[in-house]
Length: 113
Length: 113
Image (cartoon, rainbow over the protein chains, first blue to last red):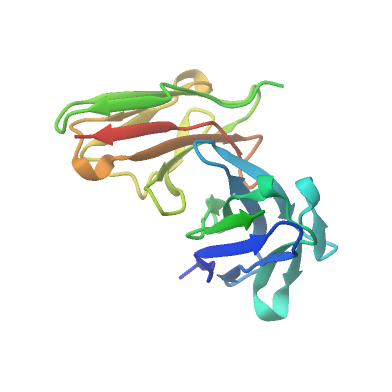
């Protein structure tokens, strides 16, 4: 069955530190891949997406993600975290005939000053 | 460009009552989605429309949930009768076509007492 796993439920980093959020998917073919961010009380905002081509994708707010087919991963990274990055982050592949977006359980990021 | 609009933002009802949510997608977007997000979980797709036709409603509890998208624009999601486990945030999203980036509204937080 198609699935997506975000192994880290909570992550805490200090402001200015680097960040990597993990995402692994299980699909028969290479899916389209998305990362969304959700701040408290807000809807989901698209950070970046991978459809094809260059496996290193740049997004908004200084985020990037790298697609690794051999590892079935699409990890999100940021070199220097800001306090405003505290939020919940969702990885979501899209695949299948209905083009259904399947969300992971999310990783909640806390940022210490 | 205006984003996805949803109303109301918050709703509190007693169990066994009915409730309706409204969504206005981004102009020109053919595909509209309703998601349910239970606290601590990622969003789960309830129903997907392509114009005014249903593409996927496999996870919609059809004994109590219904949705329509008349004229292929606005959509309403209804719950009748509501149960305690329906307490969640209901998110509406739209995309230009199936498989493309989905843009989310702010959501409606439903509390069932």
